[in-house]
Length: 89
Image 1: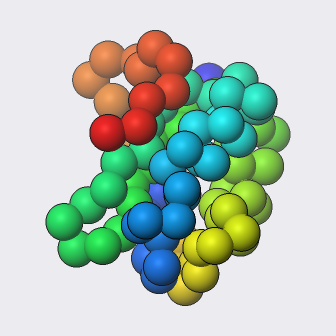
Image 2: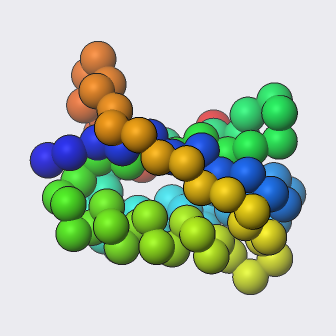
């Protein structure tokens, strides 16, 4: 299992981005979270197998219907404790 931290920029708050990300992550068996950041971005911590993470990364570049994704940054992540389930904050 690997973990990645994604930061998504654009019109990504107020467009069901977190809830849609949760649905995608759960369908792929990914654990983690999606949270709104104060600067208008969304942070996604995703832990799962490499293929599932690649599928989620591809989806994050599109987002849900009402989102306008301008940029997706990603980096390896090492959470102190492995996440359980997928939460939105």
